[in-house]
Image (tube, rainbow, N blue to C red; front, side):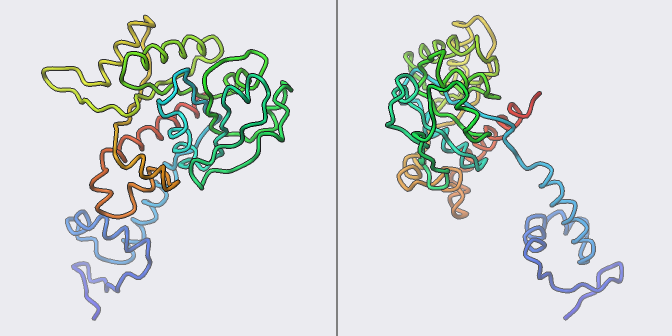
Amino acid sequence: MEKTNKEGIKDTPITNTELAKFAKKTEGAIRAMELRSPKKFEALLKLYLESKKESRLTLGGDVVMWSTKGGVGKTTLSSEIAAFFNVPVIDCDKNICLDGSDTGGYSSHYEKNEKVDVREFPWNDPLSISELPSPAIYDFGGYLSESRLELEAVQRAKLVIIPVGTDMLDITKAVESYNMIRPYNKNITFILNRYTETETPKQLGDYKRIKQAIEAALDDEISMLKLAQFRIVPIASAEHVPVYQKAQEDSLSKHKYARLLTELEHIFKKISEFTSEE
């Protein structure tokens, strides 16, 4: 049965899927405003979808993942970022980049990532990077050779990300990586990966403690993002599924991993902003 609202406009059931989702999502606000007519729903939906379209995150250029320290999450972070922005992730360890060996290729940590064999490209050719797709995520081991792909990729990158763990060696290697990259690209940010201790009134959390330690070592302010340790990360990796996707597979997961999703979304947003700057 059709109902008539206070303005005398007949309401009909909402059938449009997007409209229904929007109505459900904004149910409280709509009830408060007593906006019940399909026409007003459609007008609001149009504004909503336009705002979502305008705010869609994009990658404005290449991103290099760099650290001289192993085990800090370079490959996982590279694959996660590449999957979110739907760009290739290029896996290039020191053997490929430094001595021209043919043991590598595009990383396919997640099935969603594009796969191409790097052996098709002449790494010793200084112009070879121009043949590679852009934007892309470069996953490097962190040993710079001034005549090879690393230097070209670092110089072309809109952003260099240095992952850092929570122990002293991780911090030392992060500082070493920063000093190595800084002469070639000043657009650098750190990602504190797998932190566990949050700040309390009695002690500094991992984020503040490590950020202060790096800034003291460099005698300079730094940009640092953060991603806490979650059990779902190795589970998603084993299934070759992006963590961001795995954490949203059902309503329970969304609730359980709300903090993880918030941190990942913040990382994606900042990367989009950093790579879009002129």
